[in-house]
Length: 218
Ligand code: AP5
Ligand code: ZN
Image (cartoon, rainbow, N blue to C red; front, side, top):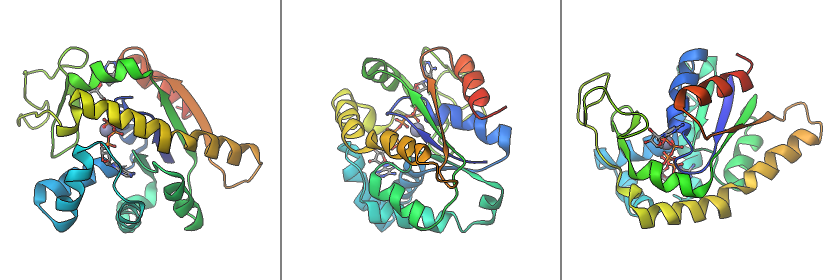
């Protein structure tokens, strides 16, 4: 299984990615998690990316495409992969197409903007794994602690309300055109085109999990 999870900030991509990777035994490739790991490690990439991420803008296509192409060389990608938060621009999608990176499904999680702000303001994240919780909708067993490791949960820098609004605007402007890009590619009858599926992202985490797995044929 090789798929792309598409959807606005706070749609639940990371949350549902956990279930999908378990169901199919594939790695999750989250460009956001990779960038946050670089920020934490203080690498040159992390230092450059931090300012961009904290402002809600996108990191440059060249950097992101390079990161993903490097990641795809790892042996765990032989079984498949799940892209979370990538591609996010037409040039990123075009780069994958040009490189012949196969994709079976593009799965869009659809959530209206007003829900996003509430979801992201209550989000708590385990930085090392990328696991996310919500203080009200998806609470950890012990408040403030990751269920698996027991380590502290933190609030992401870019989850401040004004940054969330900026991220949403960037999504509509730069990422949403991918919906037309992939649906038109599929409609053109190209055998390499991924199947396009859309699920409603409103509902409980569990209900959306069921809808997502069904959309992927499970
Ligand atoms: P990234 O980390 O990809 O962030 P994002 O796309 O903005 O998405 P989020 O992680 O905020 O949301 P999510 O959909 O994963 O939601 P989650 O499951 O956590 O990117 C961050 C930044 O990195 C970008 O702004 C950019 O600067 C840079 N970047 C990354 N990739 C890039 C790329 N390809 N190109 C350029 N730049 C890039 O859920 C959110 C909250 O809601 C949680 O609290 C969760 O518990 C809760 N929740 C989940 N499901 C439900 C539900 N059904 N009901 C109620 N609450 C729910
Ligand atoms: Zn995420």
